[in-house]
Length: 280
Image 1 (spheres, rainbow, N blue to C red):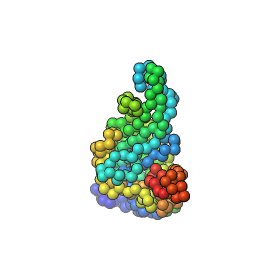
Image 2: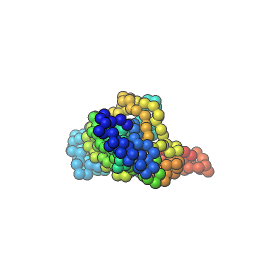
Image 3: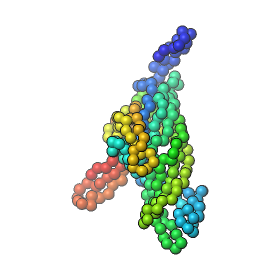
Image 4: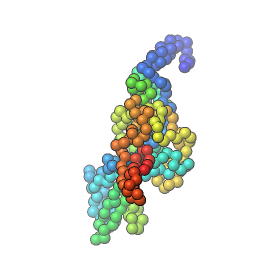
């Protein structure tokens, strides 16, 4: 650390000493990079038109207003190399370093780079007496606004902590008629996603996907990677001091769903986890 003028040297030295004196602070900077997320198919993520219905005639001539709620699940993003982000359907980039201050906090800007969700169930629309079936798809929509997160260190271990703040999202919702392939939309929704005490650690845990090189990702849901993003750095959401060394299936056990192995009923069940993948 350097100071441009000699008069500031004492204050710089004091700030450095205070920073080094923070409880068990393992690193002083959260570096720029990307974070990946996978949306569970448990119905907790929805698009809700109850307060702002889709107007009459949107889907077809004489279609009624739609004021329903559509549960969503994630669709793995198309990447180059393929599969580099595992089954992630959402990517957020930290577009600047977060440097810990003497108060033990680091603030950094974040922006949504890619999002791809689809309806768990289809919806039925009456088009002049003909019942039609539609699928909802959600994608990141154009230039995204910037949010901010503030991270804190947990003194229990010094290698993990929590982060809080706001992530602003602009999402486009399109509908596809399944029998004809006709699409309508998009409908744009702006979402202010509050983040409260999200756990994170400097290092990934066992079984967690780690991206170590720059890669391409599809940002407009056409399955063609069109944006190059940096790798992950030293910020891994989802882990805490208590779980930093636990395997992925243990940490995210609540998200796991299983069904019988239909080919061999005597074998172990097939289990799927939106973060950890699948196993037998």
